[in-house]
Image 1 (cartoon, rainbow, N blue to C red):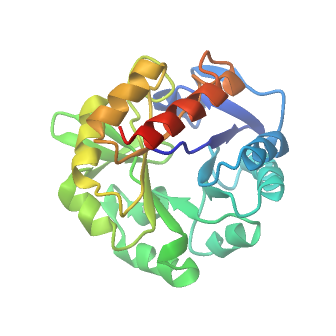
Image 2 (cartoon, rainbow, N blue to C red):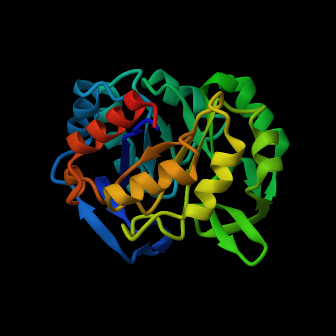
Image 3 (cartoon, rainbow, N blue to C red):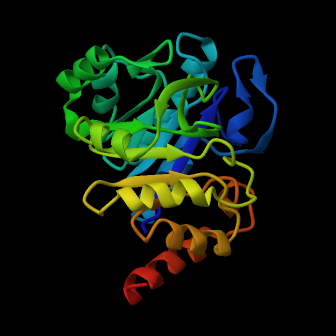
Amino acid sequence: MRFRPCIDIHNGCVKQIVGGTLSDSGVSATNFVAGEGGAFYGGLYRDLELPGGHIILLNPAGTPEYDADLKVARDALSAYPGGLMIGGGVNAENAADFLEMGATHVVVTSYVFRNGHIDMDRLERLIHEVGKEHLVLDLSCRNTEEGYRIATDRWQLLTETAVDADTLQMFSSYADEYLIHAVDVEGRRQGIDSKLAALLGNWADGSFPVTYAGGVGSFEDLELLREAGRDRLDVTIGSALDIFGGDMKLEEVLEYLKANRRSGQ
């Protein structure tokens, strides 16, 4: 299990929020607002040699707030070129621009869904513009009575697309890796969604990267994630980390993951 860093940006600030409460009219629950900008976090991840992290722009594209987010993201990418991917407001027209800024991949959900349905034409257009090797699909989801359903538009809209083995297999032909937030527990630091982790771990075989995010608040949660995900998932941690106001020291998290890899556990 590898650590994947994150930089969430909202209203021009690096933040950690309770993901399921995000709305276009405001954020009802914010865990942390950073005093430092994108360059600080990009430089930190660069110095610690932590590639493969994601920047997420949380405001709607086309708003002044999104433009402020983008400025912070540019600073992060400039500090760590070739080390971070970016998502939020990505479409076929601007995807290549994000790569030119220094991102390794673009992260996409909402653009490839319209009215709750997969838009394969849009997905094909994205691949034509940037290539499968630069595309990460964000299949973040909520748990419903019918199972896990992909959530789009800053996790406010539920689609009809299930997150299951068939969906994971199908989309893997169109992307380089997955980023999957467990939206119901995202930002709460009260435990992972072990059922979702097990679903992902049962599908993953190590050849296609899958990053799980959501609910990690302790080293016990990390161990549960490692077990439920069969040690086949990468992990991102936000609000629980000391760099975002939490109790888990980043250095200790990295040591924990390194020790478990080294011991083969």
